Image (tube, rainbow, N blue to C red; front, side, top):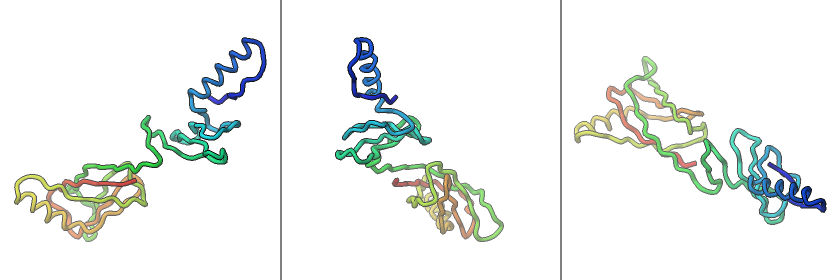
Length: 170
């Protein structure tokens, strides 16, 4: 909601109506799809023009908006904090291709084409089972991210599933 916070002279009911509208504006952080027409230093605005609402704050000189964070799936993500995303992945024994390179795609919603996640193997079981999983993972020579997935390339198709952990800093 966006209304003026400037209260003009009027009857008791008119002033009360203006006050209620001003309080609603302040309580809602000036929520709206377009920026408020009246701006003040340090004021907040919840910009709802995009797919996700963005909390903005006016700078001290009242000349520009500073993004403070974004609401994604009703969770606030601060603009000045790094987000670390950790996902457990599994390389299966199902590979595409009849010859090198063998490929396997794994969906990871948070990935974009420009991301460079860290992938580590998480072997399980006895020592010999862990060593077999490490040997299987050594067949993989590349991982390429695109929007929503990572594609692994291998010189041979793995014959055992391999548990992986992906860490992504955004």
